[in-house]
Image 1 (cartoon, rainbow over the protein chains, first blue to last red):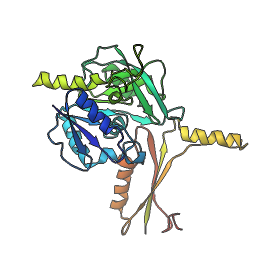
Image 2: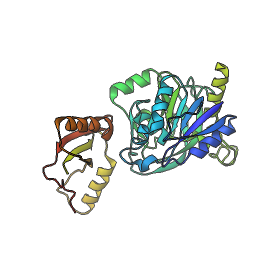
Image 3: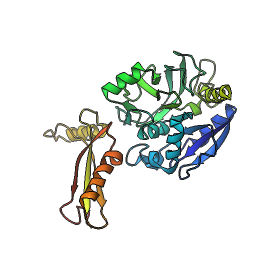
Image 4: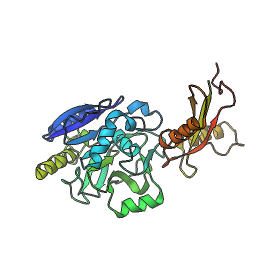
Length: 232
Length: 90
């Protein structure tokens, strides 16, 4: 199974995302923002970084790049799409997910191993988790405060579109401690924390077992691969 | 060159951390007559040719669709700058 990872000008975690795909057993395909070609991939990751230097608004310019018209069509046709950090911001700016992401309420960049609760385990990227499962993956952003109007918030909470919630601390002032969302169909998922940085022992968050041994992020990628196999 | 100005502000009900930081600095400087600061954006769109109704409508459309995000921001004003230099002269 091929998972495409889009590189935008200013993407930083595209190669980590490709590596995470390979560690999960998939084939990683590098996709370019300026192309209109998805190269026959079965799923897409929009990686973290600072596309276009966060000019205009985070993710706003990248959301209007050539490849995004293909990504939006594919997402609307059911293809799994995962947006991580800046990728989440791009999904929101592309209107594939509701709401907006603004500067952290405390004004600082935050980088920490973040505990999350899985709220929806029926999406393409979370099916390997259990509802209520607690996971730890890194979080690093300055503009991760999720906001949305009250009516939409009620709807996404009611319809199970909150995929992940922050535990212990709310690191950025997000409404209802929301760390990640899914669309109604469950194929598009976006979150601020970085699953691709927790896929290999020795390079992940600390766990009670050992330093840097956390690999909770790998399940995002194995979930989408197993889902594709089940459909095949 | 004719210039269309688009002004965008963060929504009033939202926290504006950048404005808040500036307000904090003002207070530390003893500028107590200013109780709050909000920071927005001003876009200057240089127009190749005349500013027709259609061009102005296009700018309004762009302001709503791309230059602002209605979830977090309001377009305050879209207007043709009075002077040709539009405040950007050297």
